[in-house]
Length: 416
Ligand code: ADP
Ligand code: ASP
Ligand code: MG
Image 1 (cartoon, rainbow, N blue to C red):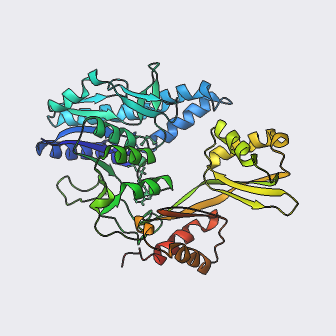
Image 2: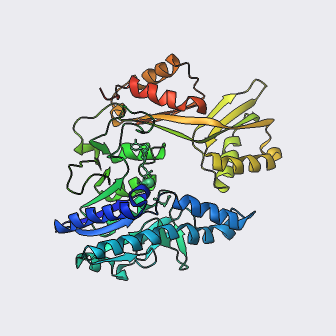
Image 3: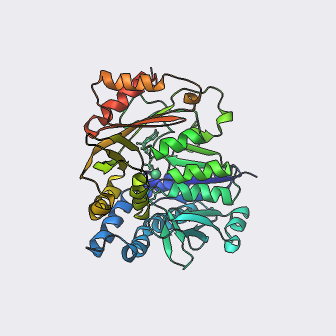
């Protein structure tokens, strides 16, 4: 009998009415004979409120180990509420169901609090046996337990990762991510109404799309799905349980017959650009700079180095998230004498826009089409980075939507 993992995001469990609809979907699938584990997020908006509460209580101590462990205790509570509510709603329909919190199913995590990584599941939690016996396991997403027995959370959007991890651990036949859109689109349908739903998207492309800003799936969930070959489907929780609702399959590249050159356009406004002027142009300077950033936990993305005007001097530009840029700025100012640069500039009014597609591996001219489309809209490109299946550019944040629309059209992705 099929084992399935279903995950419902914040909008899908936003109130009792929506939870009741989710219970209808779960009951429908159970009646078809599927053995089910259901992962829930907090009600929409709830996690944001909890984050603010934790920050409000902590005052000045809003970062660091003194904050992060209790932050996790606070923000994990949103998922506890919805898991209990859905379990009750399922019991009302006569189903056997119970809630499972992260520590109860023993989803062990490492690398601290706030953005913990999943290590694995203890074998003796009883979760697998309960599902096998036909009880619906209603699992609080986003939360786990550290080796010290403390509550941890997986970073924003982390319930997707809980779902895929549970699917891998239970050896489920599929992992259905129910959300407020009916699949993965060629770009965010909220900003491009002509975006089209993809029938299938490869793990590789989805990984790039997620990490470059398409927040429909948390990046780590895609990584896990790819590593464990979990078939993931993204679909809408809004239609009736028996409606035709194909969604988008995230699967191996070889299951996709027609490969597009470009399948998706993404954007991220959570970017900052750091420019260091007048560094010494000699071996070891970059190594020292980026070792420092790594030590401080600044996740560096794009990097460009160019000769500066002065003799034997260079400028280095790099990007990171705006949150990390504050840390970077402080650390760099504190290390000005060691790194020996002349001046520094940090700007947060930038956005990264990317085009993604496995077809790029075998086609040329993608960069040309991209740059021409941006030029036609008079959008200046600040930094460029590429991989085998994506090209990203950094632009002025004011032009983000214009750029996304222009690229969507230029790569023939608009629905007719
Ligand atoms: P959930 O609360 O269910 O986890 P999220 O808000 O995290 O849902 O993710 C769904 C949202 O992702 C959609 O409402 C949509 O605006 C956004 N999104 C961004 N890029 C894409 C894309 N390429 N395809 C589909 N949705 C996207
Ligand atoms: N509730 C958490 C968040 O808003 C986790 C999730 O929804 O996936 O980030
Ligand atoms: Mg989400």
